[in-house]
Length: 400
Ligand SMILES: Cc1ncc(COP(=O)(O)O)c(C=O)c1O
View (cartoon, rainbow, N blue to C red):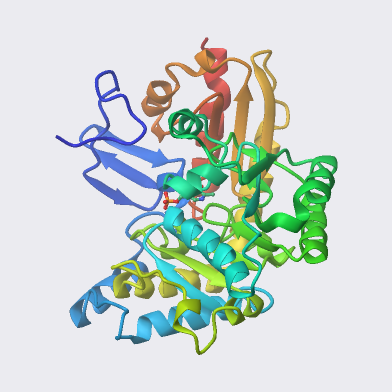
């Protein structure tokens, strides 16, 4: 039996079977639907992009996978070099893995060992954000603010080395004043907290976090698994405030294959670069730097740059702001738009019951969560398709 994600298998609605996909459309036996969430934010070019598909085919005809221990290959070297080129500052040291959660684990492991390697093993604290989400592996869940995890861990006795703060300057200042000397790192989803409820916060918080991390000698980690490659309107939020370590995933491969990267600055890397074997980073996923993933990621970045995707994202933002400007409904608490994301937050989650079915009838695939209905469309979406998605979101309320 196929076991589905985040689902009570006994009561879940039957999932919709996809038989083909092209552009922004998913095809089922009953017709086409716009994928309004880009397969969890990843399919930024839509589906069956001829150049991306070709990149995978060509690499598969050479070799699909070799381990990276003791071996190397051109797609991995080229992708590491490309990421170093497009990331700001000296974020130049690229460690690949197979999913966003693992990329976050690696970032945290790096930060903790960074301190051990430089003789500061007392720094075991991690500063993280309330409503954060960093993936589903255990350390990633611990720095997230996930009630399911806290529920599991209350039985096991949760370690108190992670401090969760809201995204306010006061809370940030207070956290550093209290714990600054014992922190190894601060981890954030920069500007946009996705799974925590599409919460958007201000750049000034990140600017101040950068200053405090420098002052207290703490590594700043940006989890850009979701925000990377344009989702907030900037190519990376790291282009606006530079972290010491960044985690990338999802759109890295244009949604073709699960893959991720943890990219460290020279300062972080140098703490591992030594004659002593025990200062090495002891990590190595079997499928790290998978050649198919690297080949398609290189093509995805090439298309992103060549076809000026930042302008496409700006256009999505402009259309969404225009379409949602006059919308209000007493059941809706807030409308939020930033970059390639638009969402409606309602007061009561029950209001959204029936929304996926309503959307499907209008040819839109959508999956609200908690009290949020949202779109993170492929960047290649046409104006009239985006308008259909946005009007589906607003017109739903007129039918209830
Ligand atoms: C900010 C963030 N970090 C990490 C992850 C985990 O990535 P993955 O599902 O590839 O493990 C996600 C997934 O939604 C995410 O949104």
